[in-house]
Image (cartoon, rainbow, N blue to C red; front, side, top):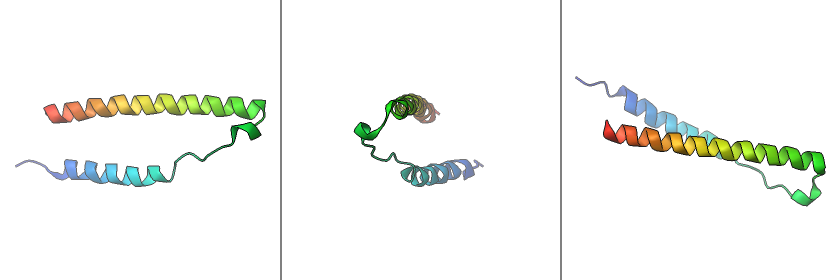
Length: 70
């Protein structure tokens, strides 16, 4: 007999993560109102978020392919 609890838990986890991530969306910032230090911090954070997004996307594709093979 197979244990079917794991896929159900993963589906629930992904659903909850998608709900939580909606609250973490970026706010619109007027770049003209920032001084030089704030602009540099904004650019560093934007670069980190872009890199994190690429890592999550690539790992998600890998997990999806692995799951479809299994």
